[in-house]
Amino acid sequence: MNKAKLLITLLAISTLHLSAQRPSNEFSISGGAGLSLLVSNDASATGLNPSAGIGYTLFFSEHVGLHIGAEWSMNTMDIRVDHSERITLGLTDANGLRYNLHTTLSGYEENLNSMFISVPVMLQFQANPTTHSFYAMGGAKILLFHGTSYESKLETYHNAAYYPDFYNWASTQTFAGLGRFSGRTTFGNTGLDMHLLLSLETGMKWRIGENTFLYTGAYLDYGLSDPLRGLRVPVSDYIATAEVQSRQAPLLTFSDKVNMMTVGIKLRLAFARSSTPKMRQAPRRVMVPCPPGWFGYMHKH
Image (cartoon, rainbow, N blue to C red; front, side, top):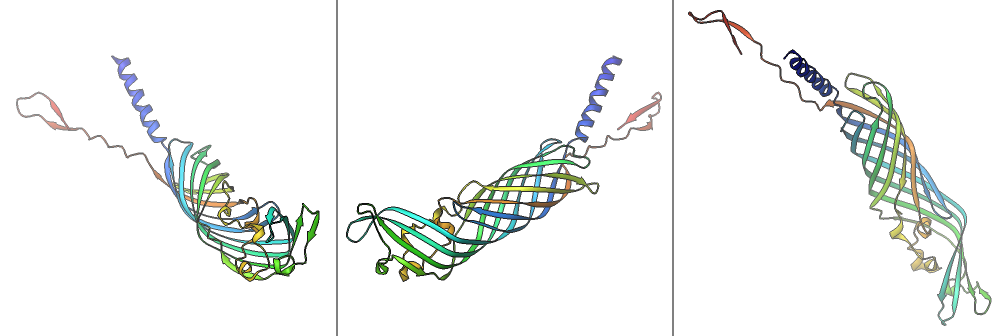
């Protein structure tokens, strides 16, 4: 009997210990800055990417949790391309003759400005939930663009047609859009709406108060889709007519594919809130006198 009571007591103590070790969920505010990079087959752009947001981390165990949030970001990129060549194969002129169009763009400058909201959904791992320790996060971010505007400037562009059936070139017929022409400055909006990123973050988690933590880390976001896929413009449309010049688009829209990547640092201030319900305190046992005629005392709850 004594052994059974001892076993029950040990199980109760173990249960209380496990309950006390359950992790605390966290509400957080964050801020960061990074360097964004757009890369295409022959051009690239770099820019600053400041961000600020809020988040909530739901812990399933001492070491693993799910982080979701919302972040506001802006991006400013500058593109510089001294010389770029494009070849469009298999075109047909007004006389029905086949030719290949060779387009050369010179002195291209572009400024691209974006504002967007990102929604991170990431799995978080932490080595030690009680003191400063290593942490890592991985998952996806959905970028919802609020506005993306550009200003582009082109010094000159040159079109030349090669006729493979005649082994000959045509490059002086300006009425047909062939030859050298002056560029122009244009403004517009790319109309970007949504973009999916793979996101990784790692660093240290510091306890700075009883229920307050500071995350200091570095992150990498990599685009899983092409943000300019719907804006592709055939190079053959880039000819010397006023109608087409008025529809000039950013240089990166002529590229086969564009990859977006951001690297930077992030600070996150987290406030823990225990997910363990408070234990109900057992009622105290009070000794009261027994009615006359009864022996001793009785226990009243």
